[in-house]
Length: 119
Length: 396
Image (cartoon, rainbow over all chains, first blue to last red; front, top):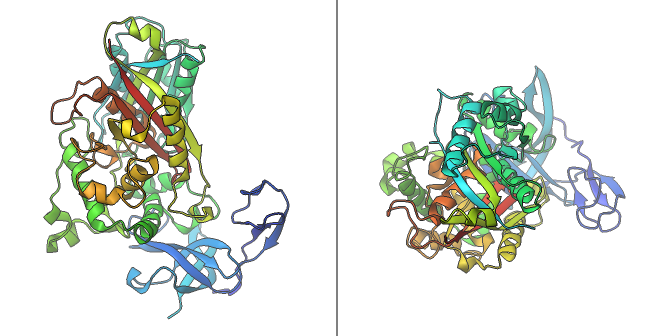
């Protein structure tokens, strides 16, 4: 079932403001250990993408499109892209984030981010 | 620190080696290097094995212990060094530092991998285990997928075109066809993979915008070198190769956290360190083996090492400047693209290829004339852990 909220936690350095995702014990810029937890907000901008045709074990489909997108509050996240072809995509376009199953492991759904191009 | 020489080098043909176990491949390459060095019954003090996946692919651990036993090198110190596809480079670093420090005199460094005994999707999954386990791997990202996203950005920012990538493919396949150790000894034609109706079928997307022939093969293989102090090597009365520079640097685990994902900072830093240690400039290098797991990487690394300015690497490849006889011959061995990429073995194989070049023992159609210096880049993860070596011919 599609869920609208994105339950990802990113970490904003309280000293220099750099945003981290995933978590680091020390800030990549200033080495501070003091972070504010933030959630991705709004839609996202597609930064790059690739349609992958040789998939790893666990994916029974012909191809998969994966990309990196930046949310309105600057959190950058990798996710799967809901498109039938890369012809529908271009870098810089706005994509709608959703929280959905991205993989099945040991019979259980693994949830993650999917981005849907806004037409 | 003592100066360190490579006095022996050996490699087995890369490819699909169903008949050999991983241990056998490591052993065969080691014996070639030991014989090449004329070690006879000289004692080897330590063995460093570069390997990424024996634990996953062969369900086998402690392969360095197995190797010294098989080779009767007991009681040599023995360690496995794992650094993803840069395991070979990291193993050589450990050997280099051990000899340079004065602690050991004779060291065997061998790198190898046996990847073809599992199915393609298992091998792809194995390589993908180096991605971030929480924010990348679950999505099904693969290393070709990483390279595809990188290529998309590199093309947009630096003007690399598919023509530029094609030039790398054709050059490396041409050179690989001349290399008896290469996995893919097959030339390709422009028509066949680029601008004919057949090309769409022959060379489909693998990870857009990269196509099948932009990717290296999945290989079995191993390579080895013998290290000793330079003053000992000089007494042998024949040309040898000195490790004059080494560098290693890391970058963020995930591509998304890099301020500019097209900036391969670890390549720049590792090569700067190695060249500075060698007191050389990029323009002093005679021949280079760069980590072209994907054609885009040969172009990007040629810029980040400093052979060409940013945005000029693709044009240089298309203009033939990286071919044998060009401004800076790159991947005369065929590179990962054609020689193959048994991940843990690649970093050592690159150095073995440079040793062959610097000893001037290759046939004319592969020998860089009067080669004096060589450079290697071994690229771990997607550029998050990179090693660089600078090697120099020492006259007898």
